[in-house]
Image (cartoon, rainbow, N blue to C red; front, side):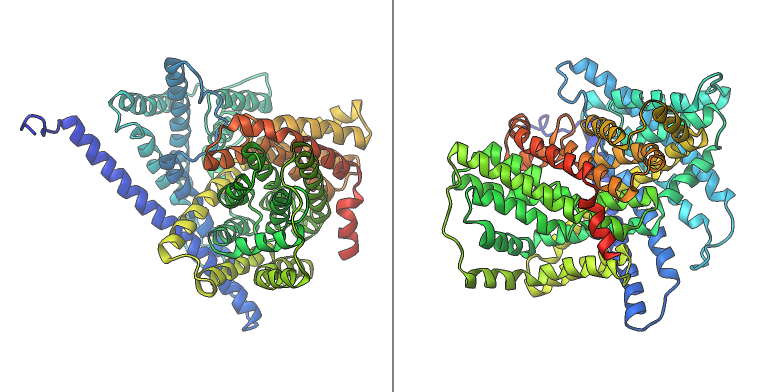
Length: 624
């Protein structure tokens, strides 16, 4: 090599140095997220031990858990920028027009930068405006809020340096942040965001739709549109928006989300899930399309433990899909069934989607969990019938030898340590022994003990990765909950739900017709928005309507969760399909086509769930 060839240009040196700094910052943020999630687990578990072992209550554990989750959310927001993990619709990701795509990305980043600056300044203001100490911890309240501006600064840095390794992209990233800063200075200096003779809800809705079109992450679209409405009509001062966000995300019930996510990740990586699969094979593996039935039954049992559809879909793609294709099942069919059956963990309790619904509507989590059992089993039956029909028509998955009674007993015994969790969760919540959050931490700890010490399924390095993945996913879900709070506040302040009730009831008063229209709307919205975002937008609007016409909010919650989960099987979002397709290395379009018969079967099940309320609330009335 000549001396000239080994020379590194200054621009390359700068790129290497920046990338090294970003990589180390990324590692540091991951480590902090892991520590925060572990601290949440230990904190909630300490509260459980103190109550049930020592018959004493630690007053500070609940408050500390809430503060830790708030910190996890805002650090996770910054890490989400680095990992490009924020939820978007992706309208122009495959757009065959590079220049137009670059311009749209530039505008999207500018809006995110502008919104981030608003968060930084209003977060800094609330940090120093708020006074006093927390009731239990006796810590200064500003400690809870200081993470908001700190996280915003990290977000801006990641946005500006996102394309620094590529000379062509470097300018666009920095220019987008510069434009965001310029917009902020302009609007703050000249006070030009003012609207008259119009509706805050209308302005907010238009702003949100515009951000969706520009592919702004859903969370930032909600926050940007809420800021536009509150500033344009002087509804809330900017610091109050941040306070609203923090209060929305700081509910003790929401701590169950990271806990159940961690439990699901630990189960998937260990042999715990394989024991469930072996149990399913022993009981339904002999039927026509046996492995297809195994996939459905596994998701049904897994749903009673984890509540995470994404982790179930990933497990199916890694374990069941290869085995199904090896035994002659078509790859698109195997992937489509894996995606479709993965909706069950969010219908059958414990369900992360139901936890979100309960947090929004303030209904009983225990009643909601019990209400999901019947509908979940019905949807599982719909999928199994579809598997049988397709397998018989296409001639694959021939019936196999039936497992003996002894083989079934051994499979059940091997799975018993895992199945105990299902009884523990539902029984404990039903009889008021513990809260869903406490159930989540016991599930996580039990999954850790079984996977790490009883079965030795992973080492400490792998455990670190699993906790890191769960922490980031929990943070991004928490971010959506946080930003939905000011968005919902604007709707409530203008009495938009009440207006919708009066308008809709003026045309349609029958509950069955209202449920039909809501189902159609949710099916449409579910194709474009992921479940958390769709739920956080629609539920505050729908609940006053269903209460007015006498529809049980518990029954409606099951309908909402089941309906919006179908969006995981439909383009353009189709998150469950994309998870399975990316792992199985198959074009997503082929999986979407293969999902059609399963989707039709699930819609039939949804109709039964919608119009036979006894299927969901009947068991609730028997047990409560």
